[in-house]
Length: 220
Image (cartoon, rainbow, N blue to C red; front, side, top):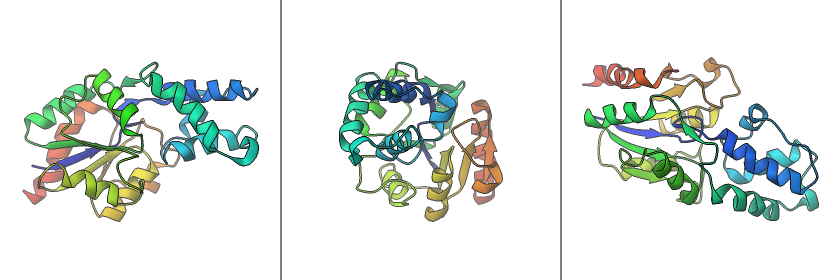
């Protein structure tokens, strides 16, 4: 059996509408025009400070040259209700249940801070199958530093590691950790699939349990 680590945003859940909602609240406060969700997806994946920096840079720059107050304003809106427009991708609960029933150990490894991430997991009913959590405030580094994966894997026992994600940051994290990367293609990836060099791809969560079985079979 394996330790299967999952990214959150763009992998287990479609959170871009919620993030965009909070981002546009920040832009409205600054007197700027809103951005659409597809544009916002390009800002997600490297941690919230970088996300807000990119949002501001792409809409006119960081006012005052100081990111902290704008990040705090964004967090005040987003952290209050990260579920406002967030949904699990179709088939996620069932796939996680099937993987757990097969004996795999499941954990989330996300750039998102612990409080909003745990609200999302519990609010969408995903926390019952997840046995560990590593978030953006768990360590002093973020993905693609492989320490994020090592920290996550160490919490949930022994066995081979698979990492499931959706962006080039996730792919680079897996590469640095020397673990197979499974790409959720409907996520927030900006690059072509081949640039991420995944061990496997999937667009339908109902296919993931069998895909995991096939990937692990040669090592069984």
